Length: 376
Image (cartoon, rainbow, N blue to C red; front, side):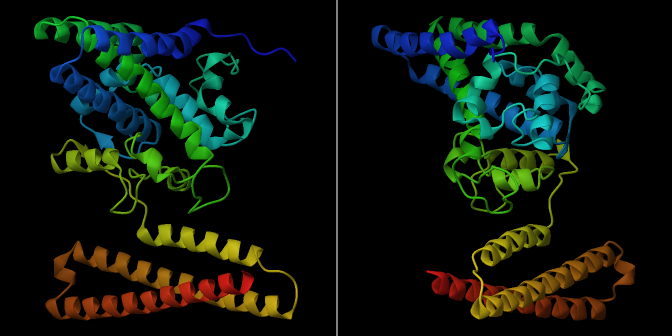
C-alpha cells in the first residue's frame, strides 16, 4: 500500500529547520555569543507562545473550559500563531477529533496506537487526512471573530511574530541576529516538540489514574515542559475542566494563569469537575483493577463480596456528602433562608459526613492493601 504524499512545507518546518537549528544555534553561540537579554527574550517567547497554545488553543477554544476577555483572546491568537502549530480552527478541529476517536487508527488524527513516531510528528508529515479544511466540528469557533481573523491572516502573523518581531527586538538591542536565533529559531523547535510530547509520550508512558478506556497517561515530568499538560489521563477523563493538574502540588502553570486572570476579571466561567466525581473515577478504576486481579475459587468469591461492599459503601458516602454540599451551597446563596442556628447545625452535619467519608476511605485503602499482599 502506497504511503500518502509528503507535505513538503511541513517537512521543511519539522525536519530541515530543526537540523538548521542544531547547526546555527551552537555555531552562533560559539562565534558571537548570546547575552542575558537575548536569553531573557527567548524565555519570554517560550512561555508566551507555549501558554498561548495550552491556555488558548487547547483549554479556551478547543474545550471551552472557560471564557476570556477579548484582549486575552487576541493575545493568545497572535502568540499562538507564533508557535506555528496551525490556526485555531485547524488545531481545534484536529484535537476534537482526537478526543472523540481517541486511539482509533483511522479516525484519530494522531493515535498513539500507531506508535511513538506517528503520534509525535509522523501524522503531520504526510497527507493522512484527505478531508481538507473540515471545520464541521468547530462551528462554534467559526463564529468567533478572533478565530476567523487569525485563520484569515495566519501566515502573515507567523511571519511578523517569528521573524519581524525578534529582528526588531534585536535591532533595538544592538545585536540583530542573536534574538532571532534564540527567540525565533530555537524557540520554535522546542515549542513544537514540547507540544508533540503530549500526543506521544503522554499517551505511552505514565499512570492511568482515572480511566483505562484509552492510552492517555498522567506524566508529571512531561508537565514541566508542557505547562501542565502532562496530566493527560485526568484531561481525557474530564476534558472540560480548566485544570489538568488537579492536585494542589501538580505543576500546572496554565491552570495558575487562568485562575489568576479570573481574579483580575479577565477570565470567567471556569469549569471545574466536582472533587466527588474525581474521587469516584479513581475509586471505579481501583475497584475494576482489584476485581480483575482475582482468580476463581471460594477465597476469590469472598474477596469479590468484600470489594463490592466496600466500593458500594464508599460511593454511597461520596454521594451523600456531595448532595449535602450542593444543598448547603444553594442555601448559602440566599442568607435569609439560613438562620445562624441552621448554619451551626449544617456545619456540624458536614463535619460528621466528612469524618464518615474519611473512615470509609481508610477502610477501602486497608482492604485494597490486604488484597495486594494476598495476591503478591
